[in-house]
Image 1 (spheres, rainbow, N blue to C red):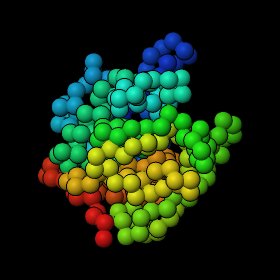
Image 2: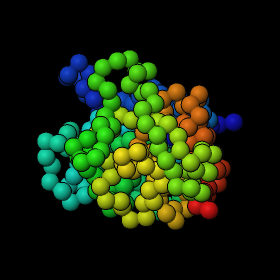
Image 3: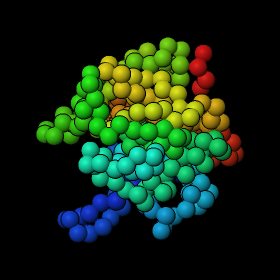
Image 4: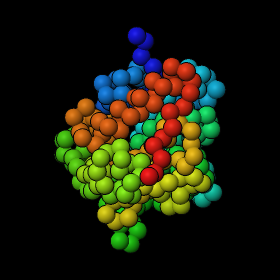
Length: 259
């Protein structure tokens, strides 16, 4: 059988500081193919090359990946500062309207790290430029040194709302996750339901209320070792089920409602 297609949002990079490329982490493709059971397709997230209309017609679901550039603060009505870091306005121009289109239709998407933040901004929310600068907050950034295993190691617990979507999906009210982000939710967007928090109060897991389809997002990186990690595997499995449902009839699979 032909596998359904998951569009993986790519990021812009310079190879050897001079050759422009669109790239995506191999672990994203591994998770989509090996756990979700779908065909990964890397998307050059730039309106010069693709449109939202084309993407929703050609893909069955979307993985909104992490990335070093941040959502430009103008997208949520704030001025850019040095603390906001680098930006990718081309990705903003594709992904923010893509999220809104998927929320409307029920086409499934899974947001990861920057993708988690994009979903919040797309729904009218805002972001803190640097979580570690806030009183009482921890440093959620990726460790600067060490192996990939050390950088993606489990570092803090995420606690879910009891009886909620993530609690039921994971079969636990708290889990251990990695953490590799600098920014985080400041103001939740309209219909954004925050169901998971880090110990310092940082939002870590959300979905879109009353969205007809799968709309889960997480601030950590579940694509790391997704086939073996007990937290990542159910997330990518549920996402794959939703993508297959969409591919089989262009009908949304509703996200689990809170009990």
